Length: 100
Image 1: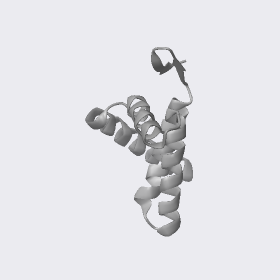
Image 2: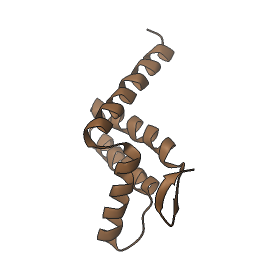
Image 3: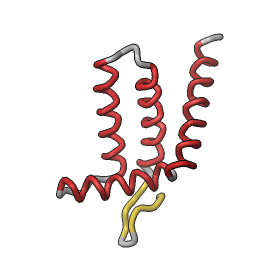
């Protein structure tokens, strides 16, 4: 298998996993809006959904530094990166978060 097919297969696998998790836990955009509200309340500062996703990327980066052979952490980094590409399109107005 060439590198292009390997990357496409891995990206497809991770995207399917994100869809499955979305069915179980809620869509990623809704989840990160919820997480941003939770963490904002806990910290006493306002965090955006994309900032929370960036923090999850940092968290997973620390994990992979501590265990570079753990493939699941590498997959999680790809997954959170895919989620981030969607979250950057969210904007906040008087009614809450919505897609641009």
